Length: 299
Ligand code: FAD
Image 1 (cartoon, rainbow, N blue to C red):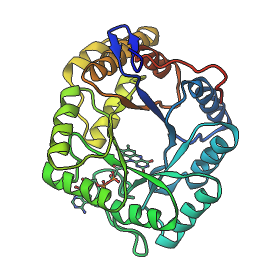
Image 2 (spheres, rainbow, N blue to C red; image 1 turned 90 degrees about the vertical axis):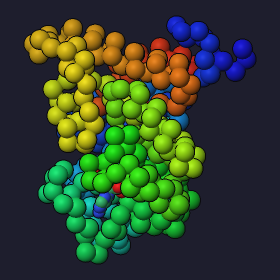
Image 3 (cartoon, protein in one colour; image 1 turned 45 degrees about the horizontal axis):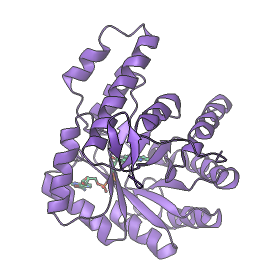
C-alpha cells in the first residue's frame, strides 16, 4: 500500500487538491482571504487560483493578490483572465505583467457578457473574441500553463453537448492543458460528462469543481445564472434553516463530504474547491479525502 493512503473508506490513492479564491474588496475581506490561504496552504495544493471580476473589474486586485501569493507563499498561483472589456493589447500587457511577477499559470476564460449573464455576448471590437483566441495568445506570450473551463451541464449559451465539446477541443488545440468544471451537485452529471469527454478523444485532466455551500439561497441563485442544476434533495436539506447558521454549517459539511467521498470512491484523484475565501469546510473535506498538512509548510 505504498502509494495509497487510508481514509475513512479504506485505501485510496493520494488525492491532489486546488483551491479557488476571489480578490478581496475591503481590508476586512483581505484579512479573511489571507487567513483562509494560511489555513489551506499546509495542505500543499497543486495550485491556488484567483478569479477575475466580471467585466475585468478586479484586474488590479486579482494581480496584487496573485503577486502576493508568489511573494509570500510557496504555493503556485493561477490567475484567472477573461476577454471582456479590453483590447487584445491590454490583455497581452496583463499576461506579460503576470510573467514578470513570476506567475506561470493562467485560467483563460471568455467571460460573461457586459450586460450580465443572459445578455448576448459581444466581443470588444479590439479584443479577443473567444477563450480559444485568449489561450492561443497566452501560449504565444510566454511559458504558461493554461487551464480552461468545462461545463458538465453545458454552458447556457451552448446549443448542444456536441457544440460544447467542440468548444473545449478548440481550447485544447490552442494550448490548454487542464479544464476545471463549473460546480455541480449530482456526481452522475460529472461522470456522464467525463464519459462524453473521453469518447470525444479529449484526454486532459478535467478537475471537478466543488462548491462549499455556505449559504444555500446564494448558491442556488448563482447556480441558476451559470446553468448548474440544484437538485430538490439539496434544497430539502437546507429547508427551514434560514435563521439557523450553525445547523446550516453542519449540513453543508455533510453535503460536501458526501459528494467528495463519492467522487473519490469512483477513482477521482484531483479536486478543485471553490472556497468562497473560507477555509474551514474545505479543510475538513480535504481531511476526509486523506489530505494532511505537511510539516513545515505554511503560507
Ligand atoms: P467558453 O468556454 O469560451 O464558452 C463556453 C460555451 O459557450 C462553449 O461551450 C460554447 O459552446 C458556448 N459559446 C461561447 N460563445 C458562443 C457563441 N458565440 N455562440 C454559441 N455558443 C457559444 N468568469 C469571470 O468573469 N471571471 C472568472 O474568474 C471566472 N472564472 C471561472 C472559472 C471556471 C472554472 C468556470 C467554469 C467559469 C468561470 N467564469 C469566470 C465564468 C465564465 O467566464 C462564463 O461562464 C462565461 O460565460 C464563459 O466563459 P468561458 O471561457 O467558460 O467560455
